[in-house]
Image (cartoon, rainbow, N blue to C red):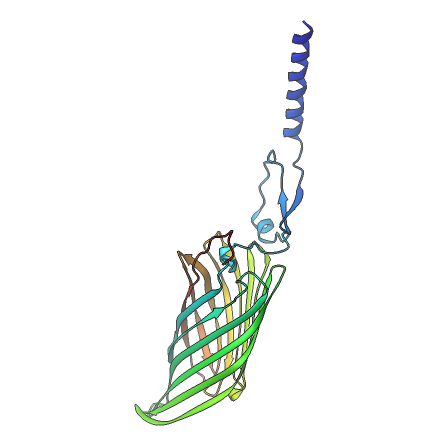
Length: 288
C-alpha cells in the first residue's frame, strides 16, 4: 500500500508540474558558442515571432562563419566575371582575389581586375565610338569587425582608350595611375545587409560609388535597391535600380541588376548587369 500511494503521488506531482510549465510563458536564454550569442527559447512556447521582429533581430553579434549568403565559405581564391550594358554601352569584366588567410579571417588581400567596354555617342551626323580597356592590381587588407567585413586596397591602375569616328580609327591614348578601393559588407541583422563600394583613380580623377541594401530571402539570395554614381574622362553617370545578390548554385554565385541610367549629356535609358562568381565549396571543418 505504501509503495502504491507513493507511486500515485509521484505521478500526480509530475502531471501538475507539466501542466504548470505548459501554461507558463517561455523563458528566453542566451548562450554563447564560439563567441556567437544564440538566443534559445523554451520549446513549450507557442508564440511565433512576427516578420518585423525577425527582420530587426540583431542579438547575434557577428556572422556565422559558414553563412553562404554572407561570403562565409572558407575559400582562399575567388574568381569573378560579368557583363554590363546600357542603351549606349556594353562591357565585360573579370578578375580574381587571393586571400591567403581565408575569406572569413582578417588578413592580406590581392585583387586583380580587368575590363573592356565600348561606348557610343552620336549627334545625328557623326558617330563616336570609344573602346576602353582598364586593368589594376590591388593589394590590401580585410578587417572583420562583428557583422562587418571591410576591405581596403590600393595599387597601380592602367587605362588604354581607342577612339573611332564614323567607324574609322581616329586616335588612342594610354594612362597610368593609382587606384584605391574600399568595399564594405555589413549585416546589422541576419535578414538585412548593406553593401557599399567606393573606387577612385588618379586617371582623370575618375570614381565609382555604389550603395546597395538588401533583404535576405531565406537562404536563396539578397534582394534590394541599388544606387551607383560614376565619373571618368567620358561622362558622368547616375544609376538607380534593383539587384539580386548571392544566388548560389553549386560552386557558383550569380548576381543580377537592372534599372535606369542618366548621364551629363542628357541621355537616359535602361541598364542591366549580370555577374558570376566562382567560389568552390570547402570542407567546413578543415583549414584549406
